[in-house]
Structure formats: structure tokens, C-alpha cells
Length: 76
Image (cartoon, rainbow, N blue to C red):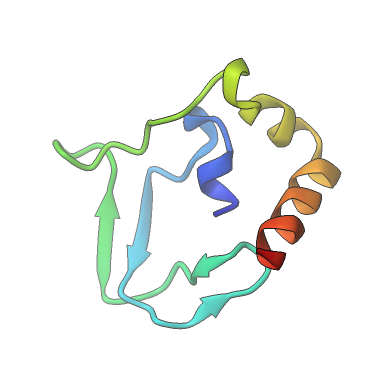
């Protein structure tokens, strides 16, 4: 979840998938597994909701706000 809330330019371009181990800090599956996901390949874009309208720059520049938002999301 943490990576998804960052601006697209700051998101990982390549990461591992296939793990079922939950990452409590960043809310999601750990960046581990047998398969590599490359966002530069067609159909694997890591863009999406980005820009001032969504607050991704604010969260990227203020770790306290990012952590607070993630803690709130964990409580839902």
C-alpha cells in the first residue's frame, strides 16, 4: 500500500511477487517470491492515481503523514 500511495515516479519499477507473507508495516505482501514483475512491460503499468489532486507528493515528502494514513487504513 505504501508504494501505491507514492507518486508514480517513486514507485518500484521491478518487484517480486508470489509471497503470501504479509508486510504489516507497508500493508501488503512482502516483496519476495519466485516471479519478477516488471512495470516497463506492456500491460504492467504502475501509473494510476497520481498528482496534487491525490496528495501523493505530500505523502512522499512527509513520512509522518504517510505513516499516519497507513495506520488509519489498518484500523478500517
